[in-house]
Length: 97
Image (spheres, helix red, strand yellow):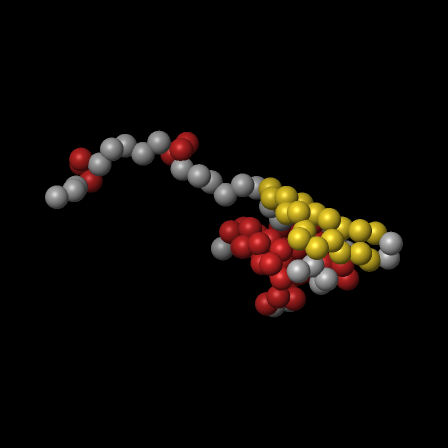
């Protein structure tokens, strides 16, 4: 029988923590107004950025946050493939829990 007393100690430093930044290379580049977007660089959102997107829901919210955080204009962000958007959404989700 395993009890808490005979479990090995856990080194907190070895537990993988979510990164505060993520670079996603887009599977398909997006072109808007002569500008080509090949990557999304995401980071932890600020409180102001979270508030700015608070009135939107679902994927409309997710794409707005992704656009705001990555610096990709929203008209270009809506053209990003679903797989890349989903990866970005999953990364950003841990900041909104």
